[in-house]
Amino acid sequence: MADIRRRMWSVAGLLAAATLSSGLLTTAANASDRDALTAKVPPIVGGQPAKIADHPWVVYLTDTQGNQFCGGTLAKANKIVTAAHCVSGEKPELVQVVAGREDKQTSEGKVAKVTGIWVHPNFQNANSGADVAVLTLDQELQQQPLAVAEKGDTSLYETGKTSTVLGWGATAEGGQASQTLQKAEVPLVSDQECQKAYPQYKSDAMVCAGLPQGGVDSCQGDSGGPLVVENKLIGIVSTGNGCARPNAPGIYTRVATYHDDVQAQLGS
Ligand code: ARG
Image (cartoon, rainbow, N blue to C red; front, side, top):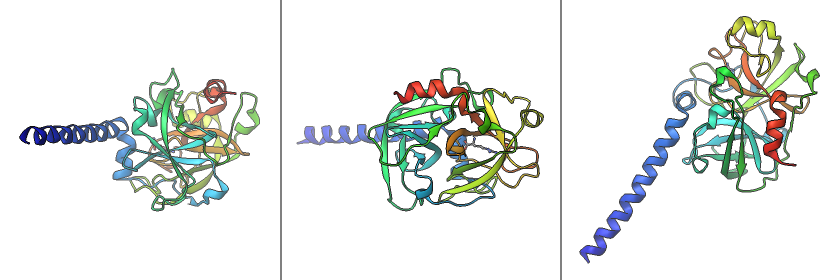
């Protein structure tokens, strides 16, 4: 009797330890995103509510407790394109993908498990480029995927072109994450202009978008989410100096540069 009880306790102890450590791992891996979420900034600044039905391919990433920490884009029925800095070093079993849910407080859509995480081999941090990752899901989602910009899609990156960014991130710098999907329109910024704002800017790896006067931008918690021009994924929310500040556009991963690597992950 005592023996059985002891054994039961040790099983419970193991379970508790496993649950605790998985929570800790998740927290540690994305500290900056998590900080933004739990504490400070609004997602998409200067935007407006968006309908998931109009953007069925936009998804968000959560930990195992369902806390949103990044965005992503459905690029194939079972593949998500996101930022490397969102998932680098993370275990697949600690990440989930929510598709078809506009409002985080509902149970609309589907929650998929992640079975694989590919991070671009050149990724070190968001400031050095290659901020792109592909997640493999445990199921095929019914939502329509978004096409990924190709090497030849140079016209999609013309300076001044209007792009759309979507996410559930903070709605003001230092603010809280949004409960509902938001979108904003931001013009693409020239390489020269972006280089002025960011010495670390790399024109092959990144593209900037924002207004000179600021006021509209992606923000903490939007990372990994889509920047879209003409129904193609041209950018991934990556980094920036604060959110929506004047002369500090958002920095996005230049997706066309990484098209071939991403396509190889998506399969034929
Ligand atoms: N790194 C942020 C994130 O992890 C995204 C920051 C985007 N910043 C910007 N000013 N556009 O959610």
